[in-house]
Image 1 (cartoon, helix red, strand yellow):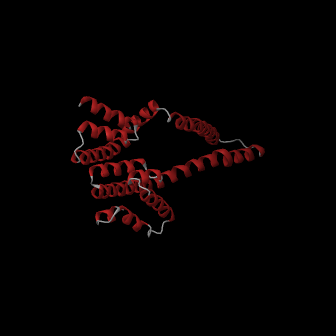
Image 2 (cartoon, rainbow, N blue to C red):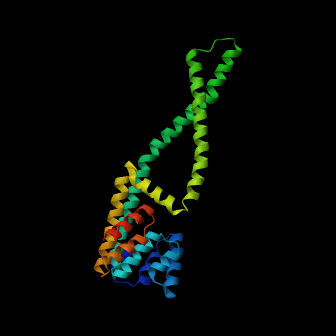
Image 3 (cartoon, helix red, strand yellow):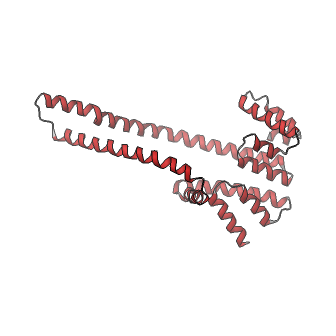
Length: 238
């Protein structure tokens, strides 16, 4: 879409290029968007009603308001590509350690929960005394199994509660603040959000939108409640 619009094609012509992608899901979404545009809807609304990410639709709205759809789509394409590449690299780097950790846990559970008790039972039947080290390993294994069971039960309780509480704005704010204050994620999320907000602000100001109104528009398009509150504080100070 970015390529087509920047080459001077209309929105419908640019969307038609995507029909040649060979991806059935993409083709289905594109056809739905084209149908809504033909019916008179704006591109951003057509994308949103077709199930596109709300943040992407918001950026398209800003582009339409600033009359710079081509540059905004190019920038959005670059941002999404970089975000996807980063996510792919992060997942790739985490897969191997996660597999090792899971295998280690499985091996410990099998050894201490099944193999060692069976050996201890055989030794007991033979009348042999179980070594102190074996007894300690067995006891430690049982403790580990109990701890893992408790952790599993806690997660099974916490995860549904988390999703239920996410419906409340106050909890979403606290969770968003937690994400932005977590040491590992803080610098990454702060950098990405800052770049996105400043980019949107740049396009709105160039379109002649008042500074406070521009921040208000950006604030309404944010998903993270912590970011929304922060932008609200900026508006109040201005």
